[in-house]
Length: 412
Ligand code: UDP
Image 1 (cartoon, rainbow, N blue to C red):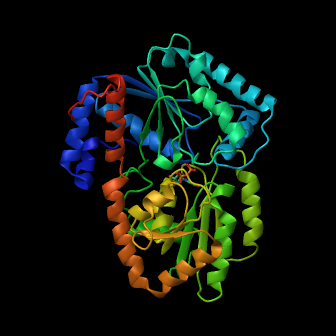
Image 2 (cartoon, rainbow, N blue to C red):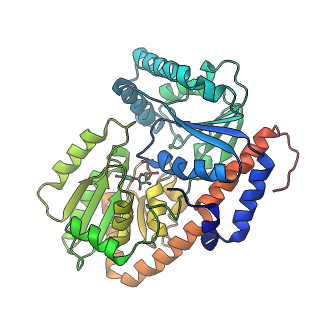
Image 3 (cartoon, rainbow, N blue to C red):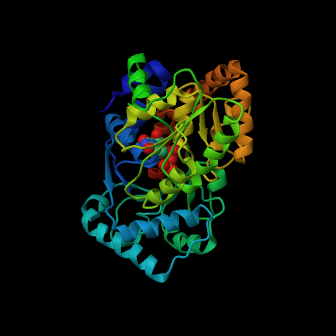
């Protein structure tokens, strides 16, 4: 479902939208291809879902390609992902060979689309090896890293870096992730689409349907964490925090996740979560299909407090989503969560389950703070993390790259 750009005027103002149209005009039909490794599930797919239609609407010839991989390939790439986020992993020569071969196979199929594109944006490590395979490429290639690579496991980074060095530019969500690479690096934090099914306003009846479906008690406080079942998201730590609070307050917890086709670790983590949850009827562990955007939206709105207790996080769109719904977020003190959660103002940053429990208790004992912090959080998202700012930055960086980033100024 695509929302026309003009519909966003009422949220971000007409000037921001006019500026996007003017920038698009300057780029006049440029061919931009985005490449990633999953059509649905996870933050990258969430962003590309709105970005491609809006790039088209402002006049770019934008498209989105998804590489296909085997189970073996996604096990290797999950290891690369974990390694880049700092976990020591065992990646054999064979693993890298599988990585290379799957990229080669995909290149055969994608060559017609990529060879002549003026800009190719490759998202995350999975398709990163496509670049050297695209002989006679015409355009500029940009690598867009969405994960926290501030402290990568060196052996993994060393191999990946040899590929990334060949790109013309890279984009990271925050300066802590930037690396020593021989090309220009742009800092562009992600954003959400406020009019998508995931984020649009909901009717009370839509909230009630979801509440009843999962048997959430409307008279007791609800804590919600939405995220893929991934160890870096620390769902078990969330259960520990809930248990500490539960000793003094009658809270309920929803842990809603799901899988992404490029994440094979989900089932193992889900099993750990189920075990940690045990028979507690007030812990709702939901394994939802990736299409359940309205359900996620409703759960975030039903929550009193949103948790995102990650130990590593590239950005955390779930944090933005919660804040946009006027909720205080208690987030792990890491990566992109720090860009969004301003301690005591838009939420709280925590490092341990004890820290999370302490902040939950504080908020539930000071309900007026839930409302105050939630209101500030929503405005903070409006100012910084909506799609208009994100699209503007993409358009300006494409313009800059096209002009050779040679220091000449240009008016936007
Ligand atoms: N999400 C979802 N269903 C789930 C879990 C997550 O739709 O069961 C969405 C979530 O609402 C968010 C995105 O997937 O839009 C996750 O993005 P984030 O940046 O938080 O984390 P990532 O999965 O990319 O690490």
